[in-house]
Image (spheres, rainbow, N blue to C red):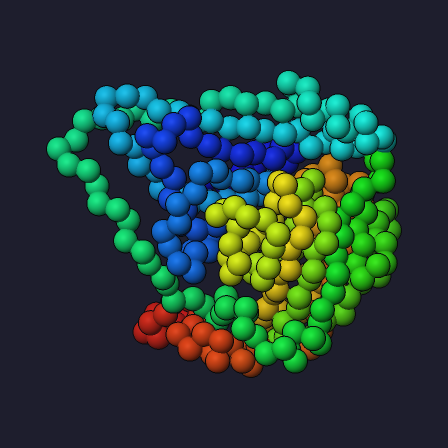
Length: 291
């Protein structure tokens, strides 16, 4: 499933417990421990998910429903108008996404077996990274808006990307780790930064869709705000853009960038200690390297 609409948040759910969702991967990265039962699929703009579906009632049609929230109404100037926008039918739509026609079969498929995968070293698990490596690059991030003006606060400093290119919000060394404590805004906005995926280190959201250790390209929480995420600044140098992944919010200033400096190609040195099975190159087996 890929969420392409630039202005909508979408939640998918089943109409009955006669069918089930099993989550396999999010944003192109397999779960640390699959397969995960879920009841809802949360998709912000740009989100992706790999989900298996199984139904238990033959000769029936079962529906996957969608509930959508139109986020550009956040451009209204008052909180009362924004709240009213979310309670109107045209801005909170619930409807049918697709239907399964369930056929009779001679046997039920077995449960999907739990799995884990080897990962490239840029996805080495950062949850147990040395504290000294984390303390070098720790930052606080807030996504917020003041009427039609969208803004970011990084370490308490306000950023709005206007008509001129601003200065870099951060300068970070390639081959190190960075941690962001996201304190507010993910119930309304979609966190997204280019190049390096983000791993959830902690969250106040109690939902099986978001688990500590999961990797994301985009993060939209729906009902929670507090996330701590880490990134491995692997290999690539230069300007890295971070922005809200809702098009209207991004276009109205909710965007900044950090500058990654150093020698292109530098890797985080402790990656194999965090994950002894991780690999460099395109494939785990060395015979495929360079192809």
